[in-house]
Image (cartoon, rainbow, N blue to C red; front, side, top):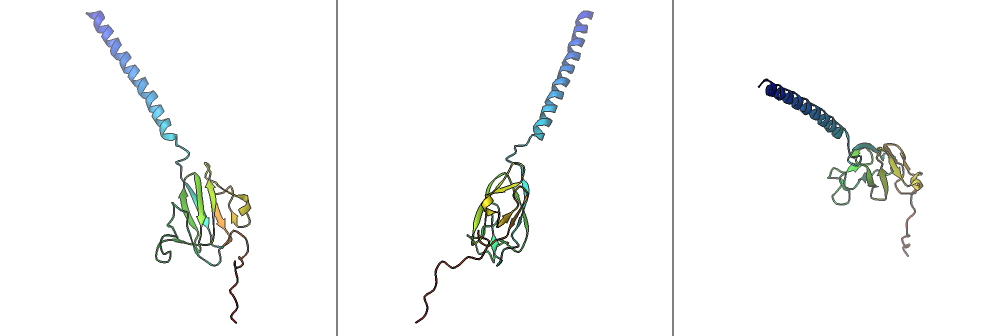
Amino acid sequence: MRRSSLNLLRFVKNSILACSLVGTVLAGDAGAAREAVNPLTREYTITIDPTALDPPTWWHVPGVTPLIWTKDPITYESYKTTDVREITLKPGEYRFGTFTFDFAFRVTLEGTLEFDRTLAQCVDGLGTAKLVIRCSHTQPYKQERDYDYPSAP
């Protein structure tokens, strides 16, 4: 009898030890799982500064900010180019647009901006988290009219 109760006691101690070890390992893995974040779901604060646009207008980033094409921007909460705004974006492709032009940009996995280098004369912020738009058109000068009105006889 004495031997069986000793075996039972040893069994219980080993079981408790095994359970505590398993619990420690699982808790460690759960902590690591909590820390691991899919980089595509991470959100970054991106600053949009269109204050240099002349004349002032409205702008949007489709799918993120209120659209300027579908509602009246004067009575809707569309963003004006007179204000600097911070928006939250996940890594991926986006477009900045006004009524006169738009262009594509990308938020990288590190939260920095990429866009076509040919826009450098009108757009700043490559490799940063601040997009600065300086031109009302994709050229750095005011556009000429596409046609002339006929003169009155």
